[in-house]
Length: 105
Ligand code: FES
Image (cartoon, rainbow, N blue to C red):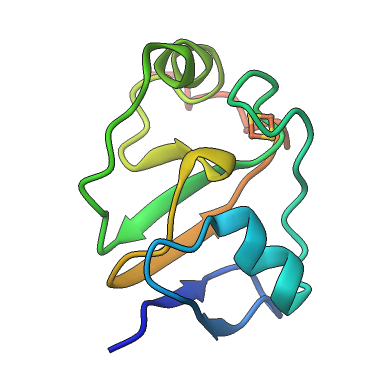
């Protein structure tokens, strides 16, 4: 069965992918509007949150360093340019959109 990627952002839809197809290739092929910049895990433009079906794909030290800055403590945070299609994935695109400050006590 082909990998399926459910993008949770409104209007992004669900796409089929080839096994281990780079997420960036999937997005280009399907015109899914995730933005990519450096393509090598340095800029954070492609920040996504894996909300389900998180694949067992390793996080490199470089990717972890970027995630520590942009999404510290956020479960499922990954850089889309470092991911490959695998199984059933549920993906929210965040990019570099500023997040609201945490609520005050
Ligand atoms: S495109 Fe720059 S970190 Fe993914």
